[in-house]
Image: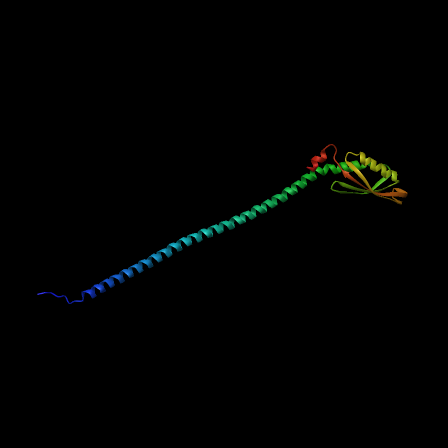
Length: 192
């Protein structure tokens, strides 16, 4: 006798395949979720590592900025100290010069000429005084022109006024400008 299978084997096969599909789909979803979680943690780890590196770089940059400020401050202090040293050296070199100028003023001063004020601005001298006559002022200018330490006399003003002190009667009040020089090339050394 023939055997007939009346069980719905096709429906069961479909159910079984559907269940296998859902299990595979669930496994794939779990695997994808697991893969996403792993990728998230991996990228998060990379990003945290980069943030740490950035923080380290920022702190090093701040430290270097402070060092640069200190270096610039030290360079500024150095320049100020060097400027002071140059001024002190210049004053040291010019110290004997003013002694020579006063000594030379005594030598070039003719009789009958009296100085009331001597003012120096840089190398320029302003000599004020009064004389018994205009010829004495001319003699002063000639003496300045022949001097080793003074040069380029320039008469600014000569006024005849009433005498005072050592010069009774009428006196010539004058203002003469001169330039301080150093004999024989010392001026170039001082300028350097």
